[in-house]
Amino acid sequence: MPALLLAIAGIGVSCSSEKDVVDPDVVISGDPNAVISGEPRAVNMVYPEKVVNLTSEQRAYVVANNAFSLNLFREISENDGNKSSFCSPLSVTYLLSMLNAGAEGNTQKEIQDVLGFGTSNPTEINAFCENLLKTAPELDPKVTLSIANSIFVNNAIGKILPSYQQEMEKYYEAKVEDMDFGNVRNVDKINNWCNQQTNGMIPKILEDNEFDPNVVMFLLNAIYFKADWTEKFEEKYTQKADFIGASETKKVNMMHQKVLANYGESDEYTSLSLPYGDGAFCMKIFLPKEGKSINDVLGRLKYEMSPDKMSVESYEKNDVCEVDVKIPRWETSTNMPLIKILKKMGIQQMFNPFFAELTKMAEGTSLYVGIMKQLAKIEVNETGSKAAAVTIAGTYETVSNIPSVPREPRKVDFHANHPFLYLITERGSNAVFFMGKYMGE
Image (cartoon, rainbow, N blue to C red; front, top):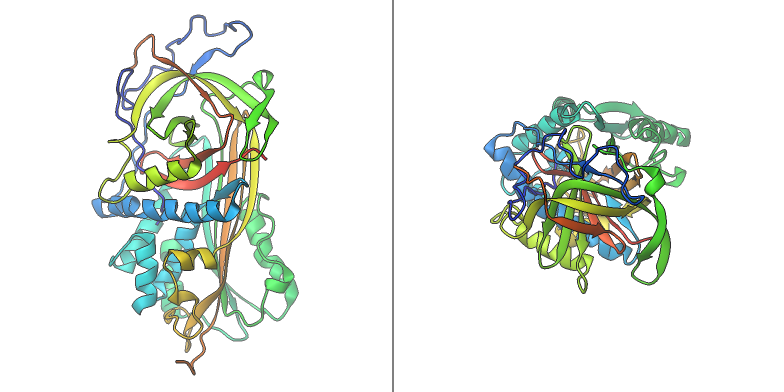
């Protein structure tokens, strides 16, 4: 399921609780049209969460899957070193859930354990994915969000099991298409699907030499997100400023705005929630404190978001404050192989050509995953954000011969002038759609 679901609701302290909603007409700093000393006026970015209808069991899936999101990103971040990282844990979760529906035995157990679903019935996991796929895109009319799934079957060597196809069409709205993998030009059909589902952000997922005629089927998930900030940054306040990276200090385009927003603080970091559209989705940025690193933040979040704690509520103090915000304008693209990472996290058997138990996907054969990767991209500017990810898995036949807000809120600065962690989340369920770190390049 959708994974990543960070429960990031806050507890009010000296200012006001995040549950309080500010009247959009409240003026934070005098005349709403005033520009004081050449700086932006303060605008309201505190909006109520929207209700997402999930059963108690589905909410438990959300909580349990938080650890997967954080673990996955920690592995990706470690792999990228001092480079910026970006991924969609949710896209990986969708693809793994589709594979899980066709698995059995220890293969299925490993997938569900790593995702945080334990011994859940795969049908219940499928229903959870279906719920998010259908409801999330409808939560905010000002946000463009799509989740799409597809399966391309090699008609020369494979035939999808009717029962598996029915499941994929019912729960994942997956498009199933047979094609000739021996014709290398058919790779364009897969790449065109990616291009279309991500509005051109991911124009290509497979190179010609990856379109292997021995692959039985390719499974794909694509997620696309586009939204304007609830209150846009004004370009006239964007200026070149220092960003203190891991190895060098460089000039970046630093956006600037004063906002009434949800501001959090812990021993390791300060955080800021910036909503999109009508407030159903937000970006939450975690800025490490002096002497702390992104790994310190990830370590704390992993602990606080564990299933027995469920959220950072008991740890992070969260106020509604008037915040002087400075964040970079940035763009990050990634191409991430996933097999090595997922093996390290505990999914081993699915990738083993002798022992994989993907037995409920194709007629007359068992499959294993020999290709798995994700391409992702994000663009953040004064207007808002665009983000997209495509995750793909290629399966082969296994080898059988084996073995209330105050009028004068506390004023704080949030100047993101050094590496930071960020999430794009759906606030009602706290599902994490995208996650990244910005290092300054």
